[in-house]
Length: 177
Image 1 (cartoon, rainbow, N blue to C red):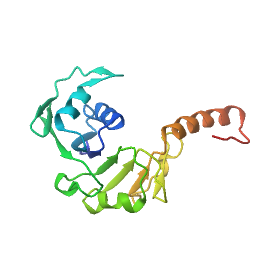
Image 2 (cartoon, rainbow, N blue to C red; image 1 turned 30 degrees about the vertical axis):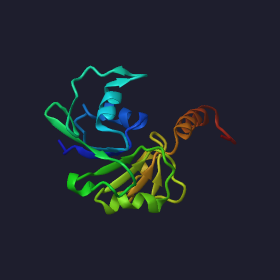
Image 3 (spheres, helix red, strand yellow; image 1 turned 180 degrees about the horizontal axis):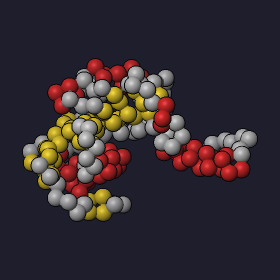
């Protein structure tokens, strides 16, 4: 089995916490560090008690500035701007920027300069990046040279998938969002 993909979360709001909930039990992924503006106690509380997904069944404890579970430790770091977190000391493969901020490429570059090998942005950036992907539409187009990738917006994700189904079934000549 391949080594797990080492993930750093930059932003631990609704999207960041949902990514954590999906990834922390999956052996393909290892959440190594989380950076957010919130206090460690608040981050832990909101992770454990989600207003939509409910209370987490698993024991995840806060010890100092780390979340501990299943012999794993995730370091909680003070947030701020991209580049403030030394991703290199955590050997991060991918930083997921889930802050919800619309960023320029030059604002994302500091994540790479700080040691991240790749950045996945949960919002469409405001200028050109290496790749915009939608799972099930064009995710096979990702290249090893793509360093800054966006998953577009949640609206675009949903509409593109529905449009693909309609186009394959009936043919779509024109569409507008």
